[in-house]
Amino acid sequence: MFSLINILSISVTLFVVIDILGSVPVIISIKRKSSGFNPLAIVLFCGVLMILFSLVGQKLLELLGIKMESFAIAGSVVLLLLALEMILGATIFKSDEGAKSGNLVPIAFPVLAGVGTVTTILSLRTQYAIPDLLVGILINLIAVYFVLRSMNWFEKMLSAQVLNAMKQFFGIILLAMAVQLFMNNV
Image (cartoon, rainbow, N blue to C red; front, side):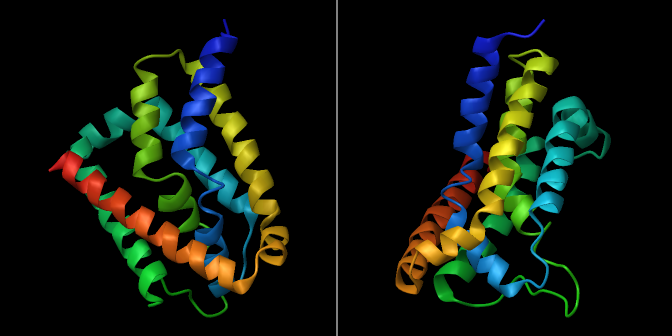
């Protein structure tokens, strides 16, 4: 029923697309602005999105009359705004006073379980069996959880200058990803 090779392939592919380690500066930046950083809530929301899209994603978009290209372009706009926030130091994603914001948007979606992740899941769904795909998703959710739980350690280990440089660098990378995602779907 389960194929270890398929699970490994799915896990590695999703790990690269999610890029949790590359997202550390982005997450730290958002975490500093939010009032209630909750790794478990982030992982649970990511898990729901990923599993939902693996099971009914294509049909859901079809039902809503949304083409995958339109979904990808919308995601690229959100990534573009997040990148500009990182590069320019502007505040685009504002957290509500007293609310535990910053957990779901923009960390869970679109940074971790964004358009790239869900389109990859939809693509993997056409190549692999659902049980293998779900195990691959679970493996990645566990990895994401442990990295998110380590955010305080990352903040202590990296100086403010290093974090700022990483934030600027990954902001440019995120901007390039947003442009590429847009261009691929126009």
